[in-house]
Image (cartoon, rainbow, N blue to C red):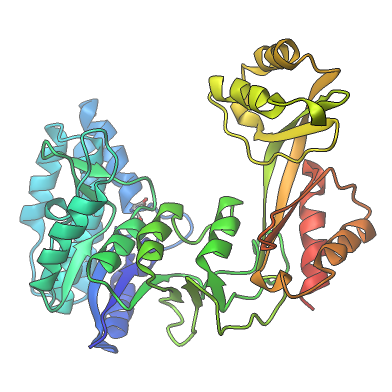
Length: 439
Ligand code: ASP
């Protein structure tokens, strides 16, 4: 029998109604054997996520604020409300009481935050009639705080084999000294991927509140359609450039194991969502481009020097300066006598003068300058390899919109064309490209 790992995000588990939808989804397919839960998210725009409430309660408790108890009662009510409305014969007050005391007695900030998924996992397991596996016993970090993938994979794999169906809370694991540590925010996606790898799942379904990955940011583009199939590599390019649906790090465990991810919508379970696959062989893309994403806030360090191309070690010396200043670069377009280094503007803060000075001294450039206000737009698509003229269409679109291109970079994989334009042209450029390719 196939095995699917299903992860539900906070908005999918925000209230009793969503719990019912989630249970229907899980029960509709017996191969959905392992469920990873987030903490209850927002029920409406102005609502609070339980994780944020737990961080806040932690601070109140730490400062011995007289409001702390009253505030914690609101967290208790989120869980009690769900249990009550579902008509469950289950009392979670003992757990809630224990958690409250443990946080008040300083079990740590991560411990506090992790209880959102822990408690929700208990409720969901009870509601589904599944076993509950505490992530604390199966997800491990090293002393230096990095995730211990091999230890986790072995122990988690052994544990999961003992269960037909189970709920595993997302977002946290255990340090070697037994304390709780969380992944970064949104980290339940990572737990889902780790669980999928450990059971060698056939599919990792990631249920959220959108019908898959959209071609671009709906706040900027007019009605971008969902992407049906995207490769891991394309997704990585797009999420690196700011597109978010999935936690960036969550891709690695499943990509490594060749397990596809299916992003689905809990509120529209009939929608096929987006499939993320290792190789798109056999899936011819419907469109030349798969997606567009962009990010503002970049600067370019421009270096000019006559006969730069003949000077061996020039690039290394410049990059060493960045390394010494702990700066990673994003792109490195170069000409015969010019070298441009694109870096996040924030990385230059407080170091501009030092960098300019070091470059001048080390490579005796004719001219060095730092220009700010650049945004990068990535046009990503495996279909570009087979479609001559894609770059021309992109440049046409930008030209027709009356925008000046400040930088062009095309990787040799022909998967990605990156252009740099002024920050203020970001929205117009993105829309112009979108309209050119999506009619
Ligand atoms: N609840 C955690 C957060 O809000 C983790 C997650 O939802 O994935 O970041």
